[in-house]
Length: 184
Image 1: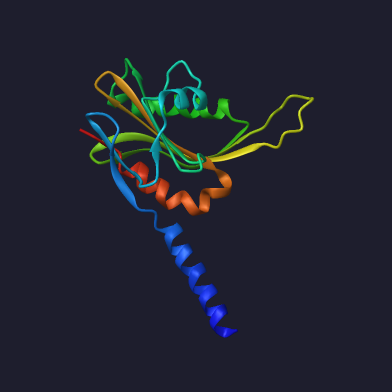
Image 2: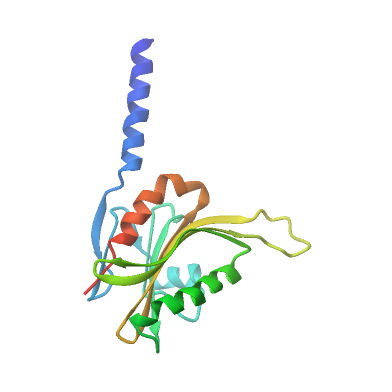
């Protein structure tokens, strides 16, 4: 009886360590951009990106976890601003996030240097409530990290989104992933 109990505890311990220590691999997003992503993330094909991110400015790339609940994406669009404008743009993008969601709790809201380049970084928990009177859908809570930078005449946005229920298991990995973005 004791051996079964010990074996069960060992399995739980090993599984916990495996979950907590997600292995990352270098992934080439474009010619100039690399990021360290979990080994089991796969790129979404164009039709998958269009379904999951139906926007005029489609992401350049989206990588997703096997269960489809954790996404890393990179979007790029022309900008008339330069790197010196990041502090001013931080206020604009923060206001945009506050407008988009029912509630936003910021964990980080800063301009910081990553791999020699300045980024606006927002790490937050958002709530999106369906506010239609006839609706009884539960609010959707997400944990996200978003980073904005300007390279040449391009605004680049890197983001990682996952369900709030997975935050404690993924926060360390999400921070490692976002801290590994490298633009040549």
